[in-house]
Length: 75
Image: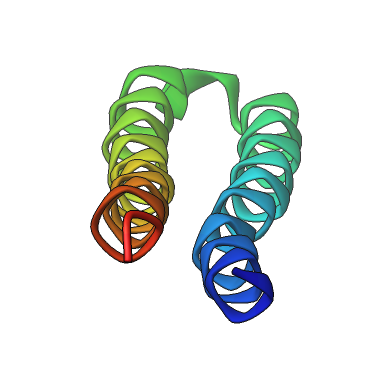
């Protein structure tokens, strides 16, 4: 059971990476909007697409962790 928990924990770590990435991207987007307010719409749309992709990666990691626990935990 210990190795299953370690595998699930490693899979869930994608959430931490996604959170850090989204935070950095948001900070840079805010900085960009402050420097060029006229490009606000383009920056926002690019930021939303990037955040959605990063969040999808975190969700995939969570799903993999659940699959590891549910499929290997019953053995």
